[in-house]
Length: 335
Image (cartoon, rainbow, N blue to C red):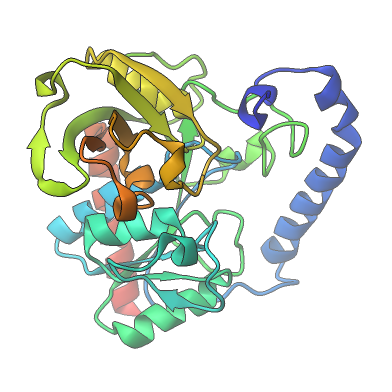
């Protein structure tokens, strides 16, 4: 079956047939943004700086790993960040605080991963303003909010917009949903503060549309049943490894494993796939992303391993971000 991600890389009969719907989607998207730009609908300030990490394409750009890097970087710089997310794929109603042991089926796999990897407050909710208010009420010491996704959630007033673009897939065929991957026109990238081009493995970008570069590479692997047991990928025993993942761009994960010299067979599931014990061989040697791992902990086989992701933005971006946040902090202090 042809996946949407592959369908959106080119023009085909099906994408052409979807153009009328795409035109309607694009019109609604543009009009909605204009209503906020002209003040017909009001955006809401939450009293602390807000950094949006989002994209203009549907799925697979690499937002959440950058969110995790950003939150940990903020903590190292002395900030006290909190994270809000829609909680895509979860069943939670209203605003729900994510705990390390929250069921991924309730809060979503990505917010749970952010909570585990950063140890900062995380709240999920479709209404991002309500989610921020819930978070700040429970954690009044938080001094900066990071929104995982939410570039199109204009009701939440923001101070910095960071748009993430996958270097390999870029903007696909350049058409709006559902004929292409675009949530908003490509021109939207001109209005954000920074665009980050995500490069995975050894593949070079074929669509250099971004301002800054961030390299994503496979890091160490740890055994799901014993997370304290970590190994470099090159130190894993040779064998019949199965690399399985349910992310937006599974090729990115496979490319990173190839770059480390790992030999494996691959199996790709749909993004946010809810794993079941029968999906993977219980007695097999399996490699997966950490996003997949949070959904497999309850039934993991003895030789199932999660691969950590090393995120390395270029130095210029880090210096720019540091200066922008310092400036924003000074402005907030004057108010």
